[in-house]
Length: 172
Image: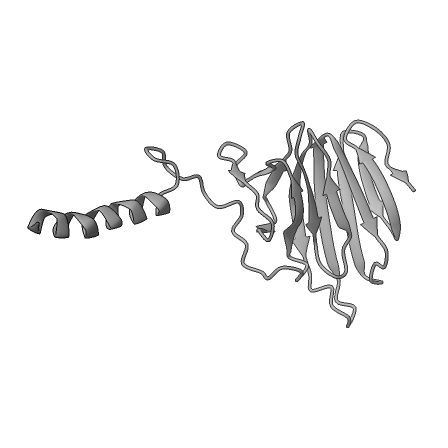
């Protein structure tokens, strides 16, 4: 009887610790990015919609699964497999982005307040593989977004874009 009353709390603690440890026997990969800003402050990106299992990494070696609401900082690389895609919100003065299936992109630079007072802001993205769709309905007068691909650098203006890594950006 005494053994049973002692075993129940111990078993409960073991179950709780198993739920909190990442993968049993494996060390956890670092968080996707050292995001110090807040979602939508134009210095970070926020994952808003996800299909499949897109991943993020700050060193392109250790990858972690991206979840809706994850805040990603400059320097973070994102990749999608054949059944994965993700939508990112870069802030009120920047475009919404959709990283299509089988893509690899890095958030190279994200700076500036981009607030209503016209503070300068910049997003620079490097698309290595796959396709990026961008929609920028109302850019601020001092806001810039550049996408670097194998074919060159594209400066986005108001509108919707289809940008393949190995081709020419198409404004729709």
